Image (cartoon, rainbow, N blue to C red; front, side):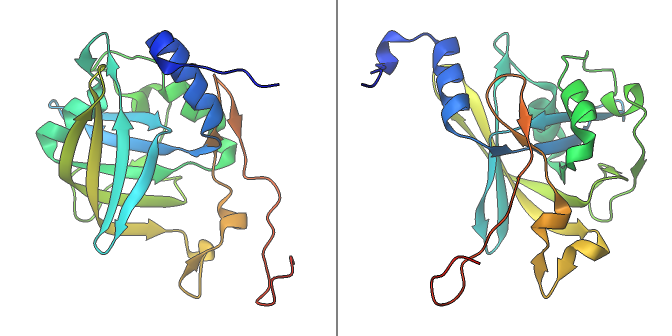
Length: 203
């Protein structure tokens, strides 16, 4: 037996709960942006991916709050840049706290006692503790759906990767230990990793 769900009969909240339970686990983009007064805003987004590797383009879906653009989207469109950080699983409490709806003039970085350091090619600072940080220039913004969610595409102009994570041109995922999002206020780690050998046997 299965439950059949017709999206046309579900309200927006029910559709959101359905899809955030189906599309799991989701990587988290911990995004820093600059407010117009120079404060550093920080927020996590779990609907993100890379959309091209030549050039490297990353896409983040940013919903609206009470019909208005979220601070992150407004800052990105005004400053035309942002920094996308990968959060380590040990930073779960900080990631969750940074999702609170602080006023635009309040810096989540300051509120949470996080340290930043200058980026090289964009004005927006990056988190000092981030194992991976991608400096991004705004490429395109597209609007989707009845709620007006904005899909923000950024071009990666510089990547910062902690030394021990980069081996033979690849990221050591088991050492990166990224935090992931699942349904509701719940998070996950990547868990056990396995690989397939060239002969198709699981290693």
